[in-house]
Structure formats: structure tokens, C-alpha cells
Length: 320
Image (cartoon, rainbow, N blue to C red; front, side):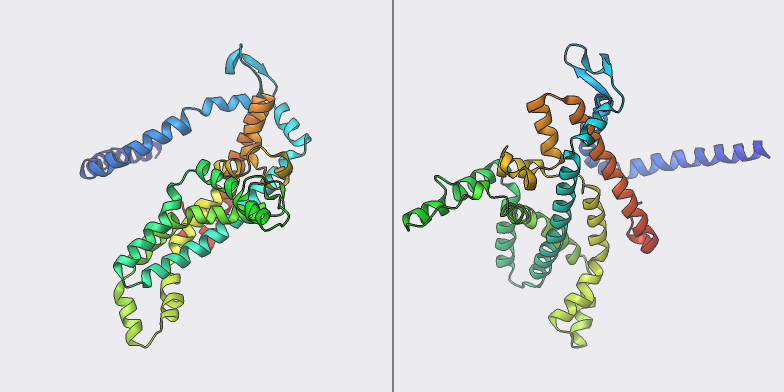
């Protein structure tokens, strides 16, 4: 019986192998197109994996990664004892949840509005203007923010000073920065995100809209009864992908907008900025690696949990 099962398994493998090569030859150009992405992921995501051991070592330059003394979970213990991990984790998660919420609302809204615009020239100009911020570096955005909100030479404070009014210390005021972070995140990603949703809207069968118009459906009825429901699969998939990154902060945005300002740590410090500061200022590579590993593990756990929930509720919408 076991021999028969083994033979059946071998036969199945032999059948699958030629099928794979047939598919490969048939779609070789498609495989060629994804090859750069595969190489990129392999080099920057898989090759550095052995470096994970730094999280469990007291890293020493002279001894190297594998020659440094093994300390086990000591780096993780120190990370949690400082209390910083709770603050930076909370900041990272809360900001990312707000980013996901506002991005979803504005990107879907803009995509739906663009799909309803009839004038092609106006639509192209609008898309171009919305997409431009995506290509602006956070370094440039940070310089713009400083020149607008700076205490000494900022545009707003210069105007206030010329009117005889008191200057506002925007750069050191923690209360305004959560709103600014959300604004700039939405501003930069609005164009790219709306294009993704617009592509999904364009793929909806136009006959459905024509039938709805014949039945007397207005624009709002078409949006909420046809467009939004048919966008749900795309929304859920992108939502899952974003939730997988909920523990990973946008280092470039937070660091370039506020710099290394200790007065704003309570509202601007996330896991990524904490790791960077630990490496640069304290030279504690072990704790930095421990924080990075903690971030990766938590992200994996979160996406597995949400994917399991989605698979139970809507199996067709799950990632795997």
C-alpha cells in the first residue's frame, strides 16, 4: 500500500514538472519582467537574513557579526526595560492606522471622482497634479516645512512678525504634529493610491453603469450601489497589505519633517527612528537589531491574524 502511494506521488511530481516548464516557456516574457523584482527582493530581503543574529549578540566591530559574544535575549530585555518600546510601538501603530484610514477615504474618493469626470484633458491635468507630490523627496518636503513653519525665518512667522503679532513655535509644539504627519502622508500618497483604485474602477464593466442609468439611477446611487461594492476586493487586498506594514513606520517622513528634535519624541518617535537613533547615537547595534526583529515578527503576526479573519469571512478576498 505504501509503495503504491509512493509511486502515485512520484507520478504526480513527474506530471507537474513538465507542466511547470510548459507554463514557463509559454509565459517566459512575463517571468522576465518580474525577474528584476525577484532579484531586488532576494538581495535586500533574503541575503541580509543571517544578520538577525546581531539581535542576540553584544556586537563588536573587531570580532565581527559571528565572532561577537552571544547574549541571548538580553538586548530584548533591555529594550523592554527602558519603556521606550511601548511608546514607540503605540506611536507606530496609531499613526499607521490613521494613515490607512485617511488614505483609503481620500484615495477611493479621488478615484471615484476622476472616473466620473468626462473631460479627458482636465482629468489628465488633475491626475498629473495629484501624482507630482509622490515624486517629491521627503528631504525636499522637510525643507519646505521648515521654510514655512520655522520660528526664525519661516514664512508664517515672518508674516506674523510683520503684522506685529507674536511668533508661534511650530517646530517645537507637539500638539500640531500628529495632524501635520497625517496631512503630509495623505498629500504625498494621494496621487499614486488614487491611480491604483482608478485602474480598478476602469476595469468595471460599463454595461452595468449603462443598465443602472436606464433604470434611472443617479450618480450617487451608481457610486454607492455599483462602484464601491465592486471595489471591495481591491480595497480588502490593499488593506491587508497595509496592515502587514502597520508596525513599520515611515522613517523618511518622520525624520525629515522633525529631525532629531527631542521635544517632539512623544509624538514623532516611532520604531524606525528609535532604531536609527540607537545605532547612530549609542552605537548599540544589538538593541537596534532587536527592535528591528521585534518589528518584523509583529508585522508577520498581524498580517497572519487579519488574513485568517478575512479568509473566514470572505475567502475570495484573502491573500492566501
